Length: 311
Image 1 (cartoon, helix red, strand yellow):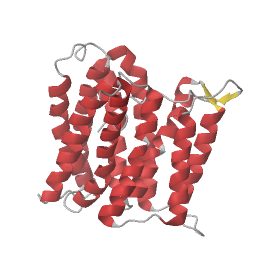
Image 2 (cartoon, one colour):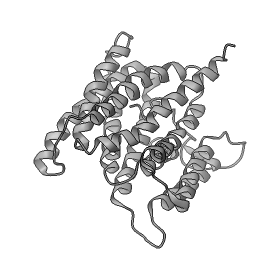
Image 3 (spheres, rainbow, N blue to C red):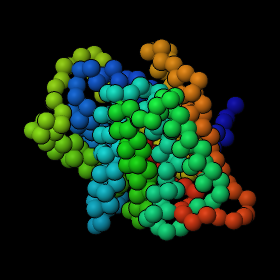
């Protein structure tokens, strides 16, 4: 029995999201063998040639202006992974994943500041629910401080939200292939500059031990999470809507939590589970189509999530 094209696309995106969800546990293990910024450099050093191989034959990526746009998009992408990977040193995979899911709720907030547009009431409710969820997930009962890892990870959500908004803004003008290539070039260049700079300033002790788990992490994140994921995502998003894609992407944190539970035995606890549930509820609310009604000042419900986490 042949599946409808949209169902095939949805299943393909679920598969990509499953790959991304497992990366949190894989990277957490690999950080015992490599410093975070060096890991990102190695990851992009493998990913950039892969994307050039996949998208290099497409037209348009060498046109004027696409490199400039790609470097801006790539800067957001690099910053997102830098904060996320460094933060993962000090927090758990499940917490990191659910905090990253907050990205999809922040998108309309970022777009509101940039494009001076309006946000729907459902989006406002989604932002509120997800923000409460972030509080429950990051702040222990009876305390008023956020852990180091959670705080660093929150910065990654801002960067990833900026990436989604930037991709949604530039992809109609320059096409996806050009942005895919140039953002990888930019991310690789920034990674190459950040490693020696971090070492010289003492922000990070650059170190590496070549182990099987490091090789596994690089293979999963660069080959599967980038080369394969980008190819599948590009095909799938021709057959499904951006909103549908964003809702599927929210499963990433669920897959990460399940993987962390099965592999590391991580449990969020009742407070953490409520927080995680509120974040997912906020994502769903922010992506639902609203009935006609009053709006609040702000941004559109969602920028085109094309590109998503991207790697």
